[in-house]
Structure formats: structure tokens, C-alpha cells
Image 1 (cartoon, one colour):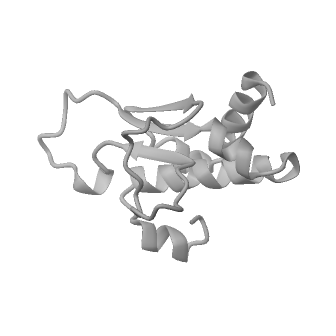
Image 2: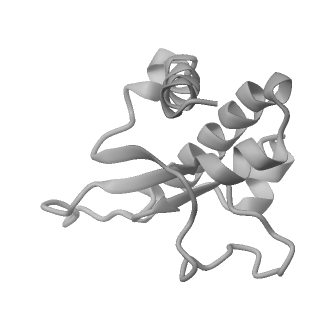
Length: 120
């Protein structure tokens, strides 16, 4: 798949968010990278875990009144692992799941709760 086509999948996932949820995304950059760096820790820590996305920042639920002047939080969607692990007919859905999963971290949801909600 061309990089541009993959970026369009991510954009489509973002456009599919409910407007009231999308409006709450503030000071967060959403980027696409080919692969995670070797130094990027896996959330689960298991050797078979695959990293499709990564949220880096301070979740909304942990911010205090003194939270201002910080660089944007960052959500990274990793193209390589997603394209490797999912056939084209499943890729769009998995990109959507990954985008929603990482946005849920931005809103303060932990892995267990995201899994319970079906976005794991």
C-alpha cells in the first residue's frame, strides 16, 4: 500500500469519530511512522506483543490546573506492523481500532478498560 493511501485510512478513522469526541482532542499530534524504534518499549512487555500505535503524553484525567505550556501529546500509528499483520480487506478496520485505542489512552483509559470496550 502506498504511504498516502495509509495516511488516508488514518484520516478516515479520525473523521469517523463522533464530533463531540473529536472536539475534545486538544494539543495532540497524530502522526504515522513506518515502524517503532527498537528502543520503544512494548506496553505489555511480552516478547510476542506487536506495537500498532503509541500514545505519549499526559492523559486528560491526570492533568491538573497547572497544566499549560506543554508540547503536544503524540499519538503514533505504525504503518509497517499493521500492513504486515492484516490483509488489505481488514486493514481499514484495524487502523480504525488502533486510532480509537490510542485516543482512548489520551482520555485516560487503561488497557483493561479499552479491552472491555472492545477496542483492544
